[in-house]
Image (cartoon, rainbow, N blue to C red; front, side):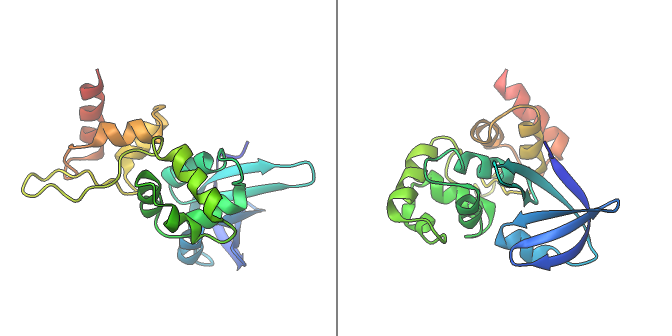
Length: 193
């Protein structure tokens, strides 16, 4: 299993990039946001999902661990394969997609290429309770936030410790985003015990 690739982008085409890792080129399919950010000759790290089929093997890449976990949740839904999951993640920032699912916004999901109304409804029914709470705006004057961004290192640290996306999101709710990553993780672990 290939968990991530770290190297230099040497080619871009379609929705894929080729990442050169010490002389070996890996073709990695990306969501639209990650594809747009990837620049030729730049160093990149993508968390990857290695999809193996009888006739082929494909790598799907994500700039954040949160996006990869959401992708893995999406492909558990009947009727959603890796390409459809990538199309859903291409609708916007990872957090916008997660929030749409948490809010049971099937209309948002139907905007993805190849995803119909029934499949979108199945996505929100199957995953709305698994992706965490819907985002609320910053709590005024308290320096705390329930807005969790896809690049949130504390969220990724909790997920690396074995939390699922929903539990990690809940654990960080109400903890000041102005604290360091280590302090936020420590506080969330203490509140859990």
